[in-house]
Amino acid sequence: MNFNKENVLLDSMALIEFTRIYLAAFYTLVAVFYTVRIISMKRQMNSEVVFVGERYCSNWKNHITFRLFRLLIWGSCLLRLYQPSFDGYLGLFPALQFTPVILTGVILLTLGFTATVILNVNMGKDWRSGIDPNGPHKIISSGIYQYSRNPMFVCVAISQLGFFLALPSVFSLVCLIVGVYTLNSQAIVEEKHLLETSNQDYQTYYAKVRRWI
Image: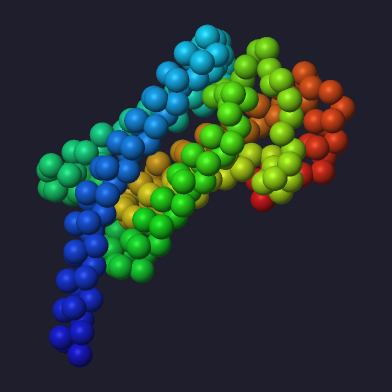
């Protein structure tokens, strides 16, 4: 019995160390993806694709909050890679530091981001970050958008939940709460804009399809 417990503990410790490397690499990949995506789209379209809005408006606050927390997560993951003792400042939850929980987190984190990338690419030149005052040029209501008005936000939220489970701590829990709140706030702001500027088609779509799932 003790031998089995020791094996389980060793497996969990090995996974924790793997996750330490994986999270640092994962969020570096996220940063590279969005940076390349935004720069390449700007060059292709010769126009802006990121719209944060006027300072202190809801759209601006949501963007700034999400960016700050994304940088904080990335920086923390890099720091704990080179300074494992930094974990002591994150408020780890020992009761959740086990293989099933951490592995579930890694899977959700990966699937959420992968789905987000696919949705980004499928939107092509219609993708925007924030509220484009001159758009959108068309309403997408087919495919996954038949079931959710904000599938990309759902995928980001799943990824954020995955981060909490992959690194169960006070820090990741705060990031999850702030992230989900910000996503919901941004969804409300963007939908309000669309209701005010789009035609009857979007109003029909809005009434028919749920905001989330």
